[in-house]
Image (tube, rainbow, N blue to C red):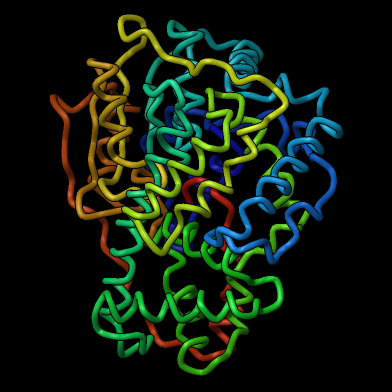
Length: 432
């Protein structure tokens, strides 16, 4: 597994529970790794933090497009200048080879693998290179490896835009059910109007580091899990109803921090080289314009600029990894049907690519991450299926749909409590 997940999945709660069931923990040593470029594996930095200094230009403004291309070109050049010796070796295929070295060091003939989000593609890359070294594999919130432009056409840009738009509507509907808590309206359209009020105000004048780009980013990343919905919505409520921006600034990330810069550096280094991207600006702008007309007033242009350093990345992209369906063992795939980050269409495509696999779909849900989730958002049916597979190798006889986990019920908070609990949205760091 990738960083932090073993600790989160095996930590004992105040009620004595762990996210991974005890039956699984009795059978397995749970081992994680820091991939190249992060944490204890030589953190990568492209150098100058000022390239991502917040507030960044308005992502939707046509007048800012040349500014964005210039900023991203300077960022790519800084990566080549300051980390160029690392860039050719920071990609998922090399991390899969590193993972096999860990297997060898452990003296294991085979390993089982549990991967979430980006970790599903690492599992796919490992299965492509070392299919006979795998035992039981769970891939949750799956990257779709089938398009040649895997990230651009799939999980990172074009495939993500419609899913993110649908998920935000689900969020607006949730907020509307609790007008007595938030005071933002009783319908989805009224809540959307409140959101529009915030971004319009930030376009007139940013509040500290919080501008339109940062507010869209905070909204985008808050959609990954309902766990942050109350604090984020309270920030909007304070701003709209009381013109108080304290919580809004607290939940909005400032990208020019060392931790965020490390993430942006390694995110681009890996995603820009794992599969091909369009190399001409015209394709990026044409596709974004077309998607913005279909999914208006949200994140299409933000999502474009977040990834567009790949248009001129200094290291050539590889072809994506594709496993041989006749070589890999049966794989258990989980996905929620409304996942905004790795849309359900990708999980279905992966299931079709691997006929011996099984897909478990969490219906009426959109959380990024299904199995062994945080205890407050737990899906017991998913956990049972996952545990049965890991313990006994039992796969469902066919693809399965399971009911979604409960949505949270917000509670009234004092102003001090809400501010103390507010924290910036995380930058696409996968599942909770």
